[in-house]
Length: 324
Length: 254
Image 1 (cartoon, rainbow over the protein chains, first blue to last red):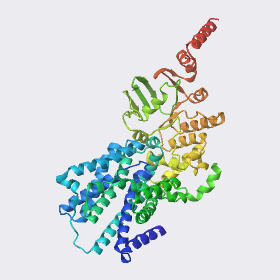
Image 2 (cartoon, rainbow over the protein chains, first blue to last red; image 1 turned 135 degrees about the horizontal axis):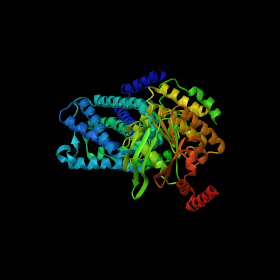
Image 3 (cartoon, each protein chain N blue to C red; image 1 turned 30 degrees about the vertical axis):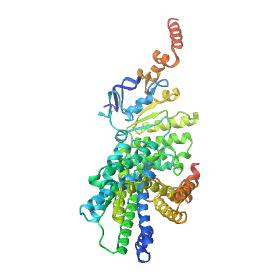
């Protein structure tokens, strides 16, 4: 109950930011919400299931183009965003069925090339996508300030949606199944988990809102081109954020997204010419010294099983001694 | 109806025939020993029954239903449980959570509370209840073997395949494990036990199947098996077998 009140307060506070913030801060806020969506989504497949996916850019770009094309055809913006979610999810279901039997590095490489393939297809399919010339989206006929607020609130809503999804996964059977798969996939099958199906579901969930974020991004910036929306960095950043905050945790991706955005912005302002290199060094150092993320510093033993019932946490310390 | 029925099961890996035309039946409530020298194909049979591998030819039936070709999670949900020769815990979960997994997924517990209750019952049965809050990786080897047993029990199995569940245990730990296996059998679970330790097999099993080079070479009561010439040849070599037969023959005539 307290958590719910706290959650509502945080979301309410975030939603009230436009009352005090200028458009620069709102732009940062929109980026933050988008990063949170990407990181929270990656956490499902990468953090809980332990499958190092580099497919985020593929889902993002696919969503951006799906949304942009539908909007270009005259569809209302929210419908285009919803459509982008569905397209990304459907694509993830097909892709997941094809590559989720691969493990570790093999899966990482297979997921990495997907964005490259889509980039090539999008660039060559000039009649549909505009190719390398990019794609313009319909301009919104509302004031600039109103636009900034609209996209901030929309992206925030998407971030809240992805958090709720992650929360449902984390406390449900599927989250438990994913943790089993991460720790020992053969044993997971042997205790009755349909590993293939569970992994595909996780992959679909990790794509759903990323597709929506891509479409929202496209509407926000009015112009997309293949190298922008299929950028490898779009795949790498969510991984860095999640690892920074704490993979396989509910709040890790959000904390990581905040930290990452702060670092990215400060470094970019301070070291304009070499910002990418400096940011890279900081990331390497942080991951080196904080392998379990910020949340790993304050880590208690997290229950892996769903905890919806009456917790047994109280008995645990007493039993620890007895078992040792 | 037999609990398990293998008919003409063969499994080839490239040029190697790991299991060669094996036909066997396991009746409800039995404790059957499956023995044979290293590489005889014992674990492959477990992997075939549990769906890890598909037979190259032949059929496997469980309670009359064909299960060859089904996936491991489907077979485990039907009530076929196994333990691994090398223990396979979820290392970063607590002991309780390790056992809640099969209770949740294989036995389809209706909720978290039901899964926890079922898991606790299994942990108490194998004597691991005091360690429920430890991580599985913190258990001793004997503890992990018992955790494997608790995990398979939480699946509510009709048949339990124990793959060298006693390997690496000291004599005192083995005696505890034997009592445990008898107690599991007393609950009506059919047990197939793969074992190198003859003491275990001879004291537990009502029937023993002997594999050699993937083929079933003998089958019978423990007493009959220990006197079977083919078994002695497989285990102790031809020279030893010839000598004992000769000696046995001399005794018989004298």
